[in-house]
Image (cartoon, rainbow, N blue to C red; front, side, top):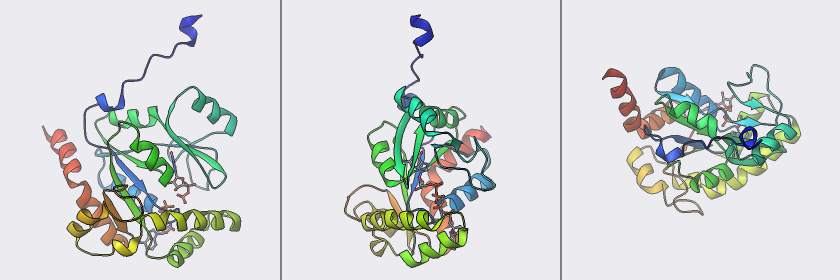
Length: 234
Ligand SMILES: Nc1nc2c(ncn2[C@@H]2O[C@H](COP(=O)(O)OP(=O)(O)O)[C@@H](O)[C@H]2O)c(=O)[nH]1
Ligand SMILES: Nc1ncnc2c1ncn2[C@@H]1O[C@H](COP(=O)(O)OP(=O)(O)O)[C@@H](O)[C@H]1O
């Protein structure tokens, strides 16, 4: 009886060797998925995506197990109750969460694990032993964000409004005004003390021009990328 109930403990996340994971956060519609998909495509065998669980419905083209593990609320709650998640959050009427397996699957392959989580997820991960690089992707303005959300055409009006509301809070905490500078080293040195919460992010990238943002993101991750590429060569 004991053995049927007993789940062998998962190895501690910090015990796993390899490159540091990367957490991407920022308002919905700011361009996180666009940037991370570029990384996954351009650096095959270097990055792996931590596939989150969610109770929201799949969008056209989204694949279960690739974009998200789509679950109903009861099933996801059961997994939360049995301790399978590093962190979970309720966002815009749905549950989202990073399972321990999602991260371990990527790290076991020696890849840089990329997580896409909201700001509550960032705070929860800070309490874990994951030790990622924290990157905030911010929009140039709330107006531009609204245009992008509407342009993506994936949300109902109600969901657009709730995402914009969450975005205003997110943007206040990571004010892009303090981070608008094209020189990466300036961003890197100063972003850790911007916003209302010092030290929340290692870097804040204002995603105005996509190519420039992607350049900055690659610069931040250069060291970890090289570690994995050198490992592949040797
Ligand atoms: N805390 C947490 N947030 C997540 C997770 N997965 C996605 N999110 C966040 O949930 C929010 C909504 O995601 P989604 O419905 O895919 O909309 P999108 O970000 O506009 O494409 C975004 O801010 C994501 O960063 C997760 O595992 N944990
Ligand atoms: N720098 C940019 N300039 C213009 N449009 C962008 C830029 N970055 C992303 N987008 C577009 O904005 C929309 C939202 O991007 P997405 O990656 O889905 O955001 P997120 O994952 O943060 O919710 C998409 O239609 C995407 O093509």
